[in-house]
Structure formats: structure tokens, C-alpha cells
Length: 294
Image (cartoon, rainbow, N blue to C red; front, side, top):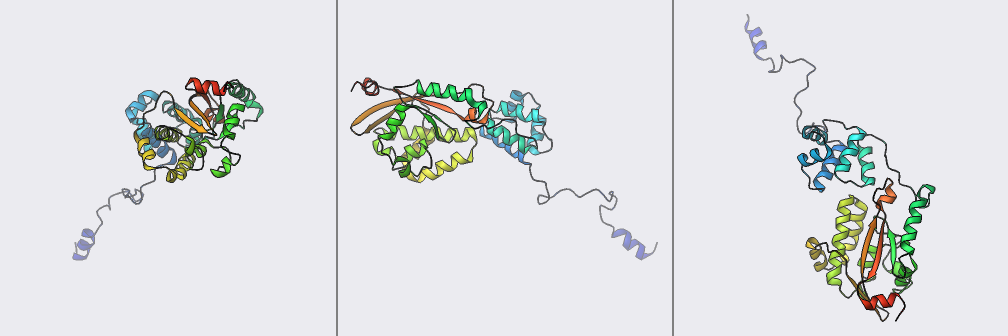
């Protein structure tokens, strides 16, 4: 063997014995990104503070398969998407997002409140709201926009002036703007230091539970108007059985708490996100006020 042949033989690359179509091991820069569904599934699991083992047991899938779904190594069926979403108690709007991210069509419609299919739902909501008189009641969506209200709530709202919604820069009737904007209810809330952190904490919890960026954006917009005590207290505020609210406006004083009602088995996004807020008097004086005895 000549020296030239020996030199060529020793200069062969180390992977010369590999098949030519075998790619090199992936580097961090060439590794595939995690697919949208895998990223969203992991995000919901972490948001619910649920381990892979706990979720696999609740959803009745193997932990190995769940790990593959979260890494993008496995592709779910639409049934698997809904099975995992049910175990994580994901709201219907976000279940549609998970389905789309996995490459499937949305499963749950988001009908208008005025659509014929929603007639019975709207009738039930209107009946509950109107029959709560003489006390205020209203129906709100996931962004706290008022969708329906009864006459007592409308009279209560009117106490704060005809330009209330203009003052709080609200294109519609939004309860968060009404309460947390400095030109809204705040000057009339007697127990602001108690109720504001609780209400802010509730809104933050709802934003986390619903996974909606739009509600988080609204809270971020209102946050600069809040004092440090409100935001700091909201971090550790307990969820009380009732929400006390003491108001004084136009020489009238009222103490109220709310009861929240939701649909038990919604199959429509609009119905899933709708809730009824019913106000009740917290003392005898408020009872007499709303019954017209004062």
C-alpha cells in the first residue's frame, strides 16, 4: 500500500461507515419546536397545578402517552383532546382552541344571545334576573360586560350619573371598569380596603381559570389606577363566602352581597361564559331601602 493510499484511508471521516441518508443528531438550533397543542396542553396542566401522573389518572391515559403528547412526539385524536380538557376543567372556548391547535374543527358553537337556539337560555336568564326584584340582578359575560339587567339595578346604576360609562372609558357596561376606574364607584365604596382586594383577586382567579388574555389585558389596563394595598392584598386575599359591599351615594346607604349562578351543563361557549349576579341586602336598612319602605 502506498503512502498516498494510507493517507487517504486515515483521512476518512469518522462517520464514513454510516448510511448516507442518516442525518446527524439534532442540535439545539435545529431541534423542532413544540407544536401548539403540546404547548397549550402543558400550559393548562401547569396552570391547574396538576402533575402528569395526576392528569393521566384523571383522564385515564398512560403517563407515557401524556408525556409524548406534551412533547409533540404523539398526535392526539379529537376524543383525546376533549378527554384531557374535561379532566383539566378547561372552559369550552379554550377547548375549541385546543382542538384547532391539534388540527381539528371546533366542537362547541358560540351563538349570539339573540339566536333562535339560545331562546330558552335567554328566557331562563331573563326570568331569573327580573324575578329577583326588588333587588338588583344582572347577567354578565366572561369579561364582566353586562348582558342583561333588571330595573332595580338600572336605578342603582343611575345614582352614579348619566355619564358613568363615559367617565370610566367603557364602550359598554363593564363592571370591572365601573368598580375599579377612579371615576367610577370607588368614591362611594365605604369599605374599599376590604372589598377591593377581594374583587380584584376574584377577577384574577377568573382570568387564570378561563385562560383568556383579554381579561388579563383589561386588568392590566386598570392596575395603574389601583393603590399598592389593593394589589398587594389581592395576592393573598381569601375567598369569602359572600362579598360584602357597603355604598353611600346620593344620601342613600346600602350594604349588599352577591350570589353567582351559572349553567350546570353548558354545551355552548356563550352559555358557558354567562353568569347571573344577584344582589341581596346584608342588613335590615338595605332591605327597607330596596323595598321602598324608606
